[in-house]
Amino acid sequence: MMGIISNFFLFSFIIIIQSFFLNDYGFYDFLLIWMLYYFTNETDKIRVLVLFLIAGYIKDSMSGGVFGVYISSYLWFFLILYISYGFFNIRNHLFVFGIGLLGIVIEAFFIFISNYLLFSSTSALKELQKVFIIELFWNSCTFFIFYLGLDSLIKTARKISSQIKRKFLKLNRI
Image: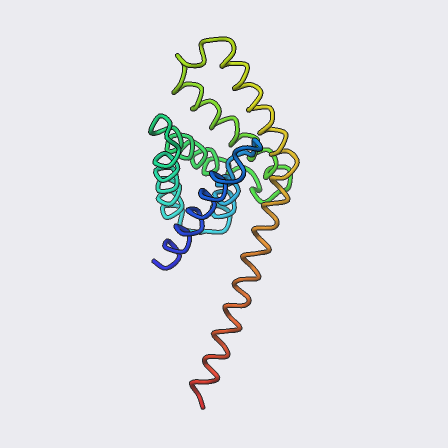
């Protein structure tokens, strides 16, 4: 239960940081990094699915767009990861890079489908293409680096947490 709550606060923090600071620069959805990391390191895939759906719900609630876009895209991202889990080494560098690009394509597809009438004009479609290309560029340059950074950050946090627990156990013995 504590893991679900801490992950809830982590992805809520990621959503807020991205909404306020990074969307203006055309960054991709940083939750994709968290989702891939959480999927690769969690053994209980039902818990992962629930957290993907909660993250999609919160992202849909905060986006102000058509409701269900992020829930649908995160669900499909989970399904592709789950199917790929049996066939590929999902911690492979090339797979992490490719699945990051695939996550962008899935989100762009659902955004396009949900706003089809809006994007039927050529100027809006060109704007969507421009945003999509910028997101793919940022993703190809930074996704793997941020994935490794998140991995390193969480391992360091776990190490510090275990050291604190050991010190408290020593204090209890006194």
